[in-house]
Length: 562
Image 1 (cartoon, rainbow, N blue to C red):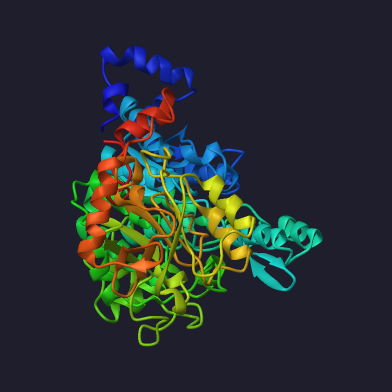
Image 2 (cartoon, helix red, strand yellow):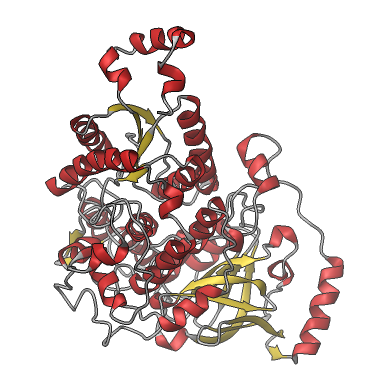
């Protein structure tokens, strides 16, 4: 066993003395040491129940003959961190989580690991760590929140942010706003729609790193506790068979995740996290193949914020396995991939049934024939940008409008709420990428303000930052190269005409001062502007944000630190 390094032989007597200090018995030291990475804390609603999940995992490990030992991982609530300096730290934590988990697991020579994540950066951070450490590992998340209910309709966090905008526009009263505040988030768990946390927990299933139900069983259901016990028992089977994360998270598994992502209509953050996970397994994640997968993958789900259904509904409809079974009817998955069940993807989903075709559209009757995400390129985004196509209304799939340019999120929000943004405008928020933010903050506040002002179907937002899974409308993020690196988004001027053509996968500057130009003319104009451009001074000269701004790769590469 790997743990023999710290438990066996006379030379390890000092190590055993310290294990004695923990209260471990000789019998426990003889068994495999299983690290349980607990992301429990009391500030993230999706993590406040993880102590119960961890205790259930411990029971499962012990029942199957292992010695469970808990150590922590950090997690940030993106909702609470939204709209202030806290959001600059969110993406940074993904690397911190991966690095610190690697350090703890290898420093203490654990034989196997159970990852217990739930929200946003915590899940991909631990997936990155799992690939890096490569000891037998299984994931069990804390589960999604139940949807709220306001005035007879289900709600989620995106409804809350939009209510703020609606209140500012005088569309709802202060009492209405307070009702949203009191009822939108009724339970513990990751926010109830197909936002980033639930996207990543569902894709953990697809990658093969979590048991069926990992992404969809609600946090407050007893089935979640049973799943945790099963995960604890299953990791011992993985250890006995020496099945490791890199046996499971292969290139084909990554492609499966991207395919199911398209069908589910996951968060655009998938295009930030999947490349980072792929990097850890040595895969060259070419972002362009996302469009190829999207072209052949139908969009089967319109979960909030794209539609009126929620993760609890997806669970009742058969969960992630039911979606995968629909996709497999057209041979869109690599079904021979190994999973933590000890079985292949094909074996896991062979008996899965779509119990509600209103929640999971049949493969022959999809919401659209193409997937939920699209990568756009052009002279504004030579290296690419990402849009959640499934959340864009038909009339905005192709749009040309004047640029309204802001170098920070706060100025954009002031303009939106001040009535200075009108139908047809294209809001550009730049210098908020991995290097420029730094930390690539989410632009949920501006997208919610746009929606709340009644402009969600007529105003686009383009940024080198990223979006919450709660963002809706023509929200195009991850523009690369970012402004801080001298990308063309840094050269956009007020009134430039921006062309968005999602079906054609195009994002381009096509005119100046309301007048369209030829491609050659536009390139000459941009060249003149580029010659005058000067980088902005670093915003932070110390601490982790300084380190991140200096070492982060581009959004389209995954935004990790190299």
